[in-house]
Structures are given as C-alpha cells and as structure tokens.
Length: 177
Picture 1 (cartoon, one colour):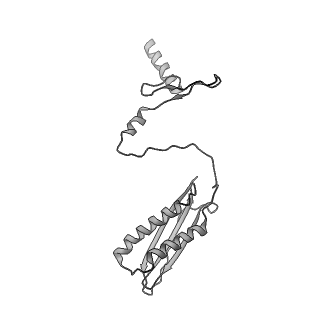
Picture 2: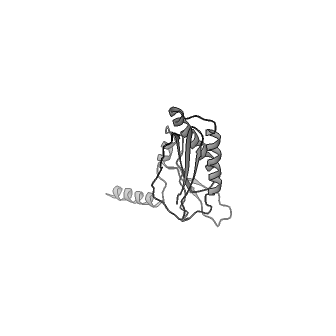
Picture 3: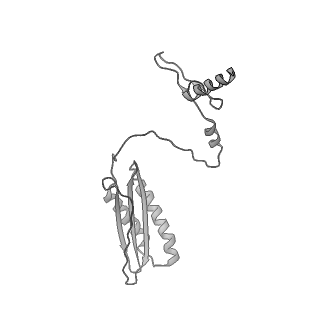
C-alpha cells in the first residue's frame, strides 16, 4: 500500500513540475550572480517523435499578445498598383482560350499574393481571387460573402479589359487576431 502512495505522490509532483519525467531531459543553466534561479529546459517524448515525422515543418507556437487591432494597415493604393501592374503585364497582348485562362488565373493569383506578402504587413491573411473571361458582349456580376470586421479588414480590386478578354482581381486582407 505504501508503494501505491509513493507512486501517486510522484505523479502529483511530475504534474506540478517538481520532478522531470522519464521522457524529459533536464538541463540546468549557469548561475551568473546568484540572484537568478536555475532554468530547466525540457523536451517531451512527443516532440522527439514529431522530429522524425515525415512532415519536415515544425509547429510554431507563439505567446498571446492580446493585440486587438493592427499596428500597421494594408496600404490599399499600393495593393491596387500591384493588381494593375500584374494584370496589365500578363493579359495585355493575350487572346482568350479556355484552358489557358485556367492556368493563367492560378499564375496571376500566386504572383499577386507573393507581391502583397512582400509588403510585410503583419497579422493579415491574404485571399486573392482572379477571374478571366471572354469578351463577347455579355454582362457579368461577381459577388462574394464572408464574415467581415469593418474596422480592420479591407479589400482592393482592379478590372482589366482588352479586345478579347477581361480580367478581374480582388485581394481581401483579413486581420488575424
């Protein structure tokens, strides 16, 4: 019965952080002035397993910042200039073809997303939509819906047209708390 009580007390101490577990490696830091406590760094068994996993990306955990609004906002004129530049350079001399437009929408959206991310605006998720269609005298309406915070979220859009096709690109910048 006494072994059972010792086992329970050891488990409580492990949970409280008083004893390192078998899967952890305790490393004590240097004491520089005697005023600071020893630091203990631990690595859990699950972290060691994740290291040998097929997925080469490591999970990044960040501390809570309690930041409720952006420090820096997305510059809409700069994003509109990016949209104008990319659509004009990719679609200026092109003729509409169905299969080509499928590939081109993917390419254009990736280029726009990369250039907007180069602006280095933190804590915004970028969503890029590109539509390419044939000009044959028809009309078209494009709409979208999403959960929106009018104070922090924003968007930019640009339309391009030549003799054969039209292109519409929209960038949504959604603030991530």
